Structures are given as structure tokens and as C-alpha cells.
Image (cartoon, rainbow, N blue to C red; front, side):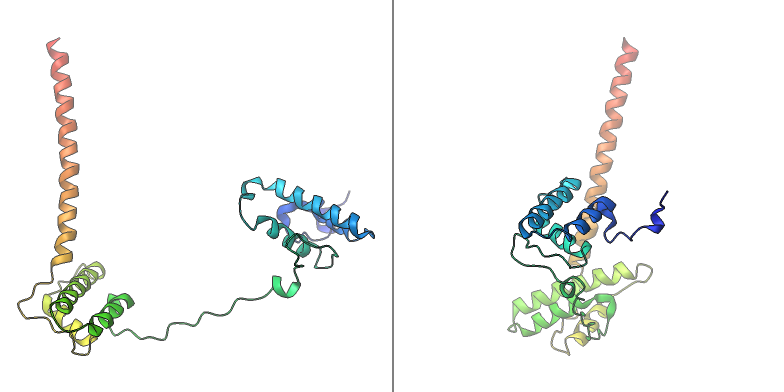
Amino acid sequence: MEYNSEKDTLIIPEYGRNVQQLIQHAKTIENDDERQAFVEHIVELMMQMHPQNRNLDDYRDKMWRHVFRIAEFDLNVMPPNGHQPSAEEAYKKPDKIPYPQNKARYRHYGDNVQKLIDKAVAMEEGPKQKGFAGVIGSYMKLAYRTWNQEHYVSDDIIKNDLETLSDGKLVMDDDASIENLTNIRSTNNNNNNNRRRGRRDNHRNHNKGRSRGRKRK
């Protein structure tokens, strides 16, 4: 009896030992045409083992890449796309993504707020810019409340932060209100609560009507 621990390590375990042995046998076939046909049959077998993935566009190419990997890239056959995978391609590491270097002055607002502020600063001064600044201020207050629910935030704090983040270029009027988005959110929550309450009341009244009808009978 031969234990699995005494056998060759499975390079891609999901295909099993039989597929790996077939690929190893293909390496011993001397005739090029016979070897090519034999490996093509192996690819078809591998695709039958995972039929749920057959609709993927590059699934067949993936199977061929796996064949070469199992063969340790020592297999003289040609995939349908005309490109033989290599070990360098298979084990190539992706380029590192640089870590963002921008340092947000108020991280609780997020990077998108700073982008919106920069866009507003680039706009021509006038009612459109003021309206955009008001929307940004409303979003800033909404974000502040989301992450600081236990603390009260006044309009003056948001206005000062907006002015600071814009380097003094976006200044809201002292009497300007920035409750637009927060009011919309609370209004939507109230409307949703009212709808749920109305459905519960209708269901309760419907059940009461049915029970009265049974009593009359």
C-alpha cells in the first residue's frame, strides 16, 4: 500500500492526481501530433471537471496555463492562442501600489470632501459656487454626525472647517443654514418609519375586522 505522503506533491490539487499523471505521461510522448492531441484531451477533461466555469471568456486559456504549470513548464505543445506560458509569467509579481501620500487635515470628512472643495474653489465666484459650497458643508455635517454621534456639531464648526480646508476661499454667510442633507436624511427616516407604522396599523385593523366577523357568525 502506498500512502499519499509518499507520492509526488500535487501542484494544483483541484484537478487530482490522475490529471497530473496524465500530464506527466504527455511529456514522454515523442510524436508531436500525438502529444498535442493528448494534451488537448486533457484540457477537455479538466473543463468537464468544472463545468460551471465554462462560460468564462478566458476559461480555456486558463486551463492551458494550468497544464503548463502542472508540467512545470516543460511541455512541448502549443495552446490555441499560440502562446506558450512560461514560469516567469506565472510567478510574476504585480507592481506595488504606492501608498497615498496626501495628508488630510480633517480625516473624519474623508478625501472626497477635499476633492469637492478643490472643485468648488476652481469654479467661478458667484451663486453657483456658493450653492456648491453649501452642499459640501451639508455633507461635511452629515459625515461629522455619522462618526461623532455622541457630540453635538454646530454650523459654525462646519463653516470654519470649510474655510480652513479651502484656504479661505470658500466662506459661507453667518446666517446660512447647512442642514439640507441632514434634514433630508431625517425626513426620509421619518417617512420610512411612518410607512412601516401605517402597514402595521392596517394589518392590525384587518385582523380585528376578521375576528369581529367570526364572532357575529
